[in-house]
Image (cartoon, rainbow, N blue to C red; front, side, top):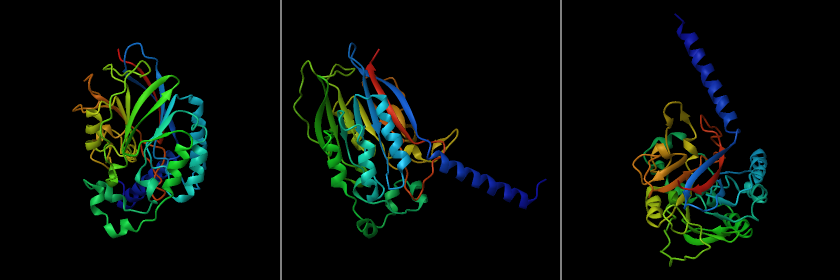
Length: 318
């Protein structure tokens, strides 16, 4: 039998190897391609590029270059669900990352890491039912502000729609898509906008229920917001924030979601409010949660959860 010393050394070696791999995986972005049967019969498909959780600094140049390369996917629409920065030094890289896309129809919401700089927090806090419960209010209030106005303006200057607790619309050629969004629920900045008068017409893209297609954007996919969007007639909602769990176990999946969303929906496409992801309720809203592209600079690791962007092709439902 191996000695205790041999077993200990073996365990340490395995741990070091796993840590090394997780550092490498966090630098291995992948483009996911997903078909979403959300449109009415006869509607032309739409390609939507979903960006989330870039967490840029002045040391994330490879991430910037990879995002810029996605212009080759030729999306019709770009949606950005926030947490663009980790430090203020990420603002100029963000401008370069988004530059190839701002001439396209787009929309965005903000995340907490667009408003406040990233600070070190114990990773064990995420094992709490609500990770925010262990935060010191005085310490939180003292966290340095990020240049969030500039984050907003570099997107609106390109013509993207700001959905910070707001409604809007965008045009893809001659086709109109309705929009609704909220500010980050993870820090209680969300306020669902009041209902707007229905706008119909031949230009509206139609969803599977024959209604004008409405997209919903939120950074953190909290249940209260998803319920409100489903009740508002949203056909597909986009969110980020979860990092896909960031550290996942084979055969088990994500340990946490960092919000009140169930682990089964921590990333990818599902239906809401079905009891189980992947349900067949034709009336349920589609939900796409991106695992995002970045991490906190203090925990630059991913395990069984590669950084990602997603190209979703909206197609007619069968």
